Length: 242
Image: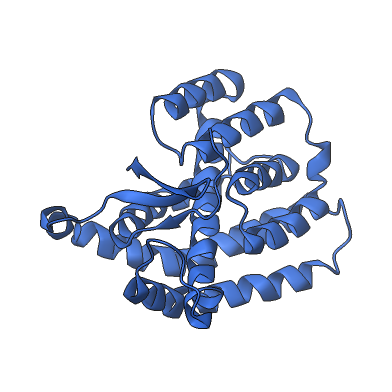
């Protein structure tokens, strides 16, 4: 499939995806702590794999540091490879469709249902993070300097930037702080950072998820309302159904 340049949301798809991602928050937390927790190195390899497709600079910085701390390059066992294979397919198809469902079934067979749910939740988490990062850049590095991206919505970009810029400022600050931590340190540090980031991000995700759920009937009746993700593929606009 063509390489993707700038994945970003339409307003309606943004709300729809926030409903989905909010529902995954308990499983995202479970990927860091609990019976279905995944090894820190594998966690970060999943994150970096999805972001390798979506290429968000904020996620590259944050999870690059977390991956360094966790020793993500050492995650080469069969369980890690199964998770990485699924993560790549998930990212290439935005977490949807028969191909992703088949990959999830293969992952369940390889690592068990609980761990597979945790891996899927992490994929949704980093997909949200990377698409959000591109939406922010569409404003800060596009609209604000009079260079808007194709098919962009100025009102949505302004509102999205106003809402999410404080969170991504925290991401940038956290990335710089993590640089002082040693490589391949204690796994509990990675788990703690991941859990805290999940809680912090959830304070932004949940309100939009609730708003999306409450407005779903209304949005479904709006003429021309889009339920697609805006994805630039080789410079051409492609629509993907939610």
